[in-house]
Image (tube, rainbow, N blue to C red; front, side, top):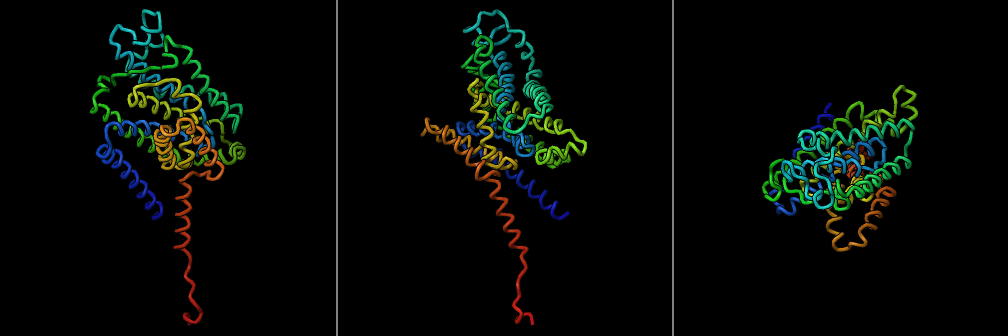
Length: 362
């Protein structure tokens, strides 16, 4: 009981420390530009929380999180573009590229802000549920699941590029000016968006931790380690994996939705194969089985991409791929595993009995 109490105290202390850093230290220490970059990185960390649940605990190498990130992002951007255009007007890109005189039928529901907000999370979860039922019922797993999920990300990006008149094509939905009545040109409102993103990240961490520490979390690990034994015990591994996949999709969708006001754009280049791999790389480097490790790893990799790609634009992609390979081959647990090893070694040293010489004992 004391061990559980101490562990719980450390968790809440860490959560409090993270809250202070995000809500007090960062806004005071960073300029508006750097705070905007941090908001972008935190959106990547939100996806990493879902990756930690699905891959770190469930063994599902989700190389297609860009699909759900994009669905959430486009759902939010569609509403914001309609709001920017004003009542009765078409979004600017439709006037430039399209010949329509009214909104396409599948755009019209996104005029309602409540529908758009719900769609940013529920639409990715619904798509994940349909895909998951098809994939897991057929017992597709391992590398086949990873390749299939990556193919879905490529397919979505190609489809979006081909629908220039209704999705903006290669450019995507750009130049987003407002966020539910607030101008994104105002630095105060940009900080408000950052605080919303930071709060959403902390909320997702709490949700993921509750799932991981619940009975379901134990069952998810059991499915990862020995799927056939779980099936023998009367559980359906497909349903267990489906829940993790759907929850991770919802988290990615929310991240994509908040990414839009933080950056002001969503495009196929942000949701295809490469971004999907980047989401996984961050979690792998930090530690896919650790929520804290996955979040910090995602932020670190996103920051490194911004910093190093400016200096080495041609070589950064290769470095990123090498980083992923090295993490999986030589440090499967990520950087978080180093902290675990240090704690275990320290605990072993403290528990090691003191050897008293025979002469002194007498």
